[in-house]
Length: 389
Image (cartoon, rainbow, N blue to C red; front, side, top):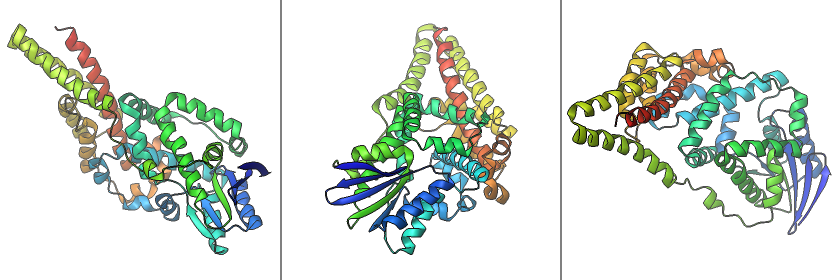
C-alpha cells in the first residue's frame, strides 16, 4: 500500500491495483463543497463513495421529515434519547449552516449530484445511523448514559460561536485528533461506536467500489482511521450487530431494586412492621420528590409533575420501565404536539428558548430530566435507607 498527498485535504492511496482518492471535508463548509466537486471532475473515477447511509441520505433529501414523526411511538419504543441527540445535532448543524450559508451535508449531496451527472457508481459508505446509535447507547452503560444525557441537557445552555475560520481549522488532522482524544477520555464507548467502528466500516465500503479508481468524500475526522484500516480485512457483518447490554449494566439494573426490596423486607422481619413501613415511606418520598423535581424543571404540565411524583418510587424498582417514559407519555397526551411544532423542530432546538417552548423537544426534556433526577433520587434513597438500619 502506498499513501501520498494528492493535494490539500486529499490523499491518494494505491492498494492492490486500486487507486482511492480520500477527500477530507468539514460538514458545513463552502470550500469542502468545491473540493468534493472539483476532485471528482478532475479524477473522473469509476465510483464515488460518500459518508452517508440510506437513512441519512433520505434525511438530507427530505428536510421536512420531522413533520411525520409520531412522538408517542418514539417514547414507547424507548428511542427518546436517540431522537433527542439527533435533534440537537440537527439544530446545531442548521445553526452553523444558516450562519455560513451552507446546508449541513452539502458537500456529500454535491458529490452525489456530480456522480449521478457523470453516471458513476455511487457507494453509500457509512453504516446505518440507527445501528450506530443503538450500539452507542448499549455500549455506554448506566454511568456513561447518565453522563452523556446530562451533558446533552446542560449543553443546551452553551452558546459557543463557531466561525468559518474555525471550521476550516478543524479540517486539519492534528486538531481533529486532539479533539477526538479528549472526547474519548470522557466517553470511550461513544468513540468506539461513533468513530472507530465507522472508520472500519467506511474503509471496507470504500474498497468495495467497482473499477480501478474511487473518490471517497468523508468527514476529515475519519481520514486517519480510514487510512489505518483501508488495507485490512474487515468483517462488516460483525459491525452491524446490535449487541446486548453489558452484563454489569444488567446486574446493576436488577441488583439495586432487588437490594432495596430485600432491605425493606429484612428490616420488617428483624425490627418489626412499623420500621419496615417507615423505610418504605422514606423510599417513596425521596424518589417521588426527585422525580417530580425533574418534571418541574422541564416545565411540564402540573398533571405530568403529579404523575412523575406518583410513579417514580415504583419505576425506580423496575428496570423495564423508567419514570421519565411515563411522564413523557402523559405530557404528550396533555400537550399534543402541534403541526407548527413539527414544522419548526429543527430550528427550535438550536436555541434554549426554542427547546423549552417546542412541544416535541419539551416532551423529550421531560423524559430526560425526570429520569436524570429520578436516578439521583434512587441513590439518595439508598443512602437514606442505610441510615435507618
